[in-house]
Image (cartoon, helix red, strand yellow):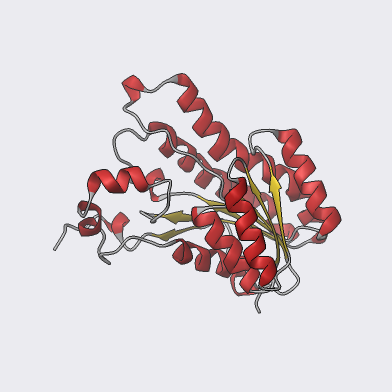
Length: 252
């Protein structure tokens, strides 16, 4: 087990990519806490599933945009599971629309959740990791940061900022043994992407050189790698996990 007795915290962990990451970290021996905003039933189901599999898991309800709630959640995890070694900033939302129709509230909510949530949780754990002189911070970005589609100005802006944040923070924390990396998924089969997938149909698969949609497990395996000692000399990188779609190749 590559992560035995490590303490991991995953945001947005009850569904989709986050759920896959929680399960993968637990399977590698980590004690895993995850936060969720509104999906209590899904969170309870995941916690129960992992507990029955003899994993140490903790589910906490938390609004990632609320710095006070974030700090309380981190303190609870530290008290019950121990010092946090791994942070995965996964919580994110989408509110797609053409820019001329985009409501200010939809711009703000996407930036506050995707980027603000990443800031809040990283701020809450960074100093402790620096004192331990060891830590892994993994931010979930998106290929949309560089290869976006119409209607994604808010989402692309949030993910592009996460990439820049990742690189800048990596420089600051490297000398203290803390690595900071990001994972940029392509089209992954989750509830959040369901509307886009239903609208585009098989066109999406034809755009992907590997001819299939990504699965949460594809991203989770990358997260486990970046969290492990195997990635101890990797920092400030954005790992693209997209089946090749960002290569821009014409369908064949």
